[in-house]
Each structure stands twice: as C-alpha cells, then as structure tokens.
Image 1 (cartoon, rainbow, N blue to C red):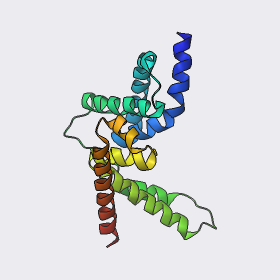
Image 2 (image 1 turned 30 degrees about the horizontal axis):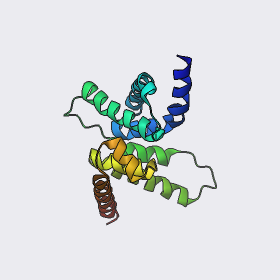
Image 3 (image 1 turned 60 degrees about the vertical axis):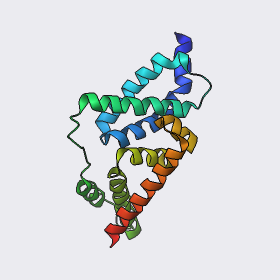
Image 4 (image 1 turned 30 degrees about the vertical axis):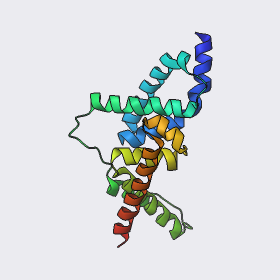
Length: 175
C-alpha cells in the first residue's frame, strides 16, 4: 500500500493544477471542477498499479477528462448549458482597486482576458477541450490524442477549427 501511495504522489500529484484547470474548462464551474478532480484522483489511485511508463501528465488528464464527462452526465441535466456570466466577470475586473498609479493597460488587459475566456467558453466542447489542452496546458498533438481518444489528425483539425472560430468571434466583437 505504501508503494502505491508513493507512486500516486510521484505520478498524479504533480499534475493536480493542470487537472483542475482542465476540469474547470470542461465543467465551467469551480465547485464542480473540484468534485471532478477529487473523483479523478480516486480513479487514478485505484488504477495506479496499472500505470506504465507513459506520459504521466497525459495519463492524469485522460482520467480527468473521462471523469468529467461521466460526472457531468450523472449530475447535470443535459438540457442545461452552464455559461459564466461574462458581464459579472467584466464588472468584477473593473471593480478591483488598482491603486492610484494603475495604468490603463492593466484595465485593457483584464477586459481582453475576460473577452478571450468568454470566447473560449463559447466554443463547442470538442474544440474547447482541444484548444485548452494545447494552448493552456501545453500538450503536444500526440498527448492530446491520448487524452481525448481521437487520432492526431482529428486533434489538428479540431485545433484549427477552434482557432478559426475564436478569431472570428473576437473579430466580430471588435467590429
């Protein structure tokens, strides 16, 4: 048992931040993401003896992804699509006390960040998760293919489509 705990600590724990970030993007909710990561950790612990010499990060993120979709099916009505309140995020960013010498660039950066996050959140699930795994998690195409269970070519096309949709959406907002 002690050997499994050590292995779990070495394989899973270093990737908890990435696991939470992915769960949050999939669930679109911090509280649900915490529940998903907790469940994923239990699954990883149960399966740690079967972990081979593969990419530990991709292995953990695969478990988180699969757990997230299973958890969402079980705990959410499929007709309900959670969306963060973009106006609330923008208001919260604008209400922060930036101090007397805060440059306008800080305000612009926060507004741009909120717009980008909202645009990513609006992408269809398969495009959003591929984009998040590549651009935010920094996984290569092969690792994304392992995590999502699709061929590398599908990863590449999803990523290209996600980027096009993101650019188009942000371009419309600027017009």
